[in-house]
Length: 291
Image (cartoon, rainbow, N blue to C red; front, side):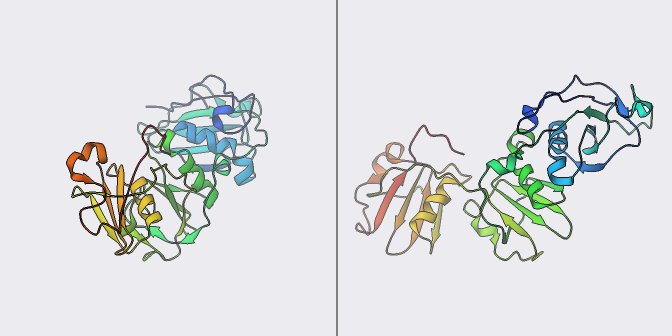
């Protein structure tokens, strides 16, 4: 089994790999001219490393080699024109367990990395334990953010937070944040304590104005000791399809439900049948895009 390589040449650039034109894929490679080796879950992530290599690594990437079986992404400052003596099409046979996908691009123009068009909260020493969707080796926290931004497209994960470990240069992306998984959120992180935690700034979902009322029973989860705004965010980011919540201003209780006043029928009442002056009800506005 030999190298299986994809060769592409980029001819126009704006922002991100999707704005770059690439030549058709070839089963080819340039031997011995790798400037840096990175990990990528998908060939387009490897292209992304190439596009932003000048920004992150001070490398003018002209080609990449991608190995699907291992996820290895080799970026190079050469292409088939600058290193014709080392360009092999097809690649020579190396071993039965080794396959390589080769991508070559030409010039990379200046632009903004994908993560920079997303607003981020400040980094803090914290973590969500045991809820990682993917793990990468990266050089800095900005590359970790890049993986988060591209996660929906390449990793089938809706990234809501990242953790970066400077000493090991490890990046963890998670489908959870402090609101969707508060019982596993630790500040500071218990182990390791130098974990840097960052969340993209959220777009809050739209809820109906509060009314004195409640759904009797049908609580998916009950939280205590939080404020009404945090209760709303926990409903928004709940993994249990929360569409309404109730909050008691006297006891600081927060109840999340997968029902609303319409689907709850007779179990919904205005005002609530108990503690009628303190229970308030909100429900998610239908037909809105949840980011």
